[in-house]
Length: 69
Image: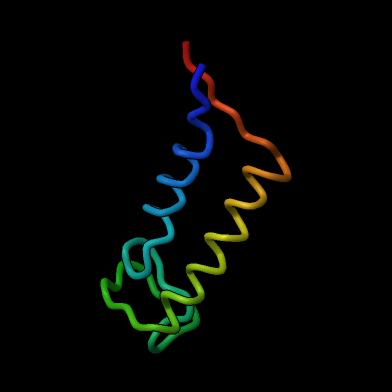
């Protein structure tokens, strides 16, 4: 049986936390901007920290597993 939990969680978080796609933290003019489609190094760094924290919580602390077969 294959464990698809890490793959699914990783893909969903990657899509949701892509800087500028749905939201951007911090924004250029406001603390949070939505559907901005612009990015820079600080935006990428902050979204990477959020991604790492959430994936750690979901995979290690909660232990999400999706098995097939």
